Length: 371
Ligand code: FES
Ligand SMILES: [Fe+2]
Image (cartoon, rainbow, N blue to C red):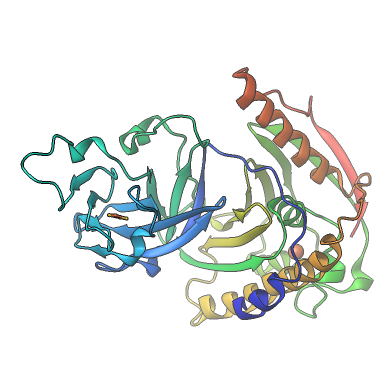
């Protein structure tokens, strides 16, 4: 999956997007971090080195030594401190505080503990390592400020027992195109044409209620369309099925399907790795068919094909976007995309002025489209 993206990335780089700071973003899967191994990731154009301390705490530092800039990931990690490979400065991994400069003599007055490598608040949820990315240049954010930060996002769960799976794919387009693709109601019958999902012949008129929620909008609880895959699967339980889909800034789509005691929930995020590349991560959890063997493998197989269809489409879209075409947003199928841009603008304004964020929607709205 990733190999093919790399091949096309250099050629197909569309325009940059404005990035939203002061929020949590998933950096990588926690399975990439084990023991004293350090992993690297890119978030909002910031190179990161990540790991987990012997005490079990995840850490994320800017992968740049504050002395001369060599990536700290080339150095060593002993379970507590990261040591730079160039001149051996050591930093406490969670706070980034310097604890040793080997070249100092007894005559030097420099106090290493006043030097910090940039470190970011970092938490694990649903097998993802989430990193809080503050606005650049807004002064130092102490990692211990975590308590004052918004909650770390996670997949909603409605029972003790459940299964879960995750998928990810790199997208060679900016985060805005990734997100509006995620919230786009009209591409399903074309991009996701498959016998197990739906066919072009199944296109019909839809009418859905939307309402404003904090920092986003909700497709109000409704019966899913009768030819959708979750409806067919959950139909066997013979109870009413409801679906709710939320979009929440900066990049989150929550989908919750409930049928009596049975549920399926997912959190999909589109994360800017740089100004013109992003990555889609899908985390899902469910308690349906818990007794069916290999269900997780089957779900991942179909999920991967589904995400792959979106990914391939966006790789192709990026070929067009690199020529910077002017584009269109139409009613009503592109209204969620318009709301996304308006919400983002409102958030940028609120961050610039310090005033509370205004919401672009004044109340519930009904949208109609064919898909
Ligand atoms: S560059 Fe890192 S210690 Fe000198
Ligand atoms: Fe899609």
